[in-house]
Image (cartoon, rainbow, N blue to C red):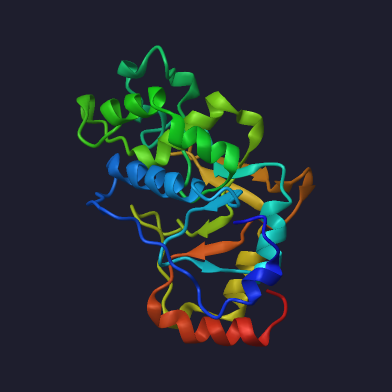
Length: 257
């Protein structure tokens, strides 16, 4: 997001798209996911007007209008990056002692990859080589003792816990439904898209996680925006293309969003 006024955006007739040259294959759960994020940030940082960077996919949709999203993100003192401590097999068990001394087990964190970060934090991600190298070498599927580490879930949360823990909000502004308990989150079909669904998504004001150990502990934290409790989510995923008409109808006919 840029510091330019909203008026300049409203005068555009089309959305200008930028495509990175020399695209490369990205594998699920591989360090190439992080590589892609770093390349996107590096390209976006070339424009000095860009002050905030939001990672989304083609299955993400906005839950609010542009003004709401812009004011929420640009007015925040923090970057929005999910970060929590999971003591179970899908969390700290993935840690490798080969990461020492730079990355300690006590600092190893997990979180959603969908971030909204300020310029200074984007620069940290692009400039880092020390911690990135540790994750490239020792956080990947098929490691020793049956460990399957996925760098896109651990690198950024761990990096910012160590580099600037007070600068991140520890929750993501992108809603994801993991209630089905599968490796991938729930995907929404056209029949799922209702006013009630979107209203529920935009009403959530607490960030939830469940640990992957035997305790299955429910971790909760209020979504604090500059110290004030507010609804957590600006975006949501995963939506199939077939949901477009229903989404457009709801966004066009209800002012709550």
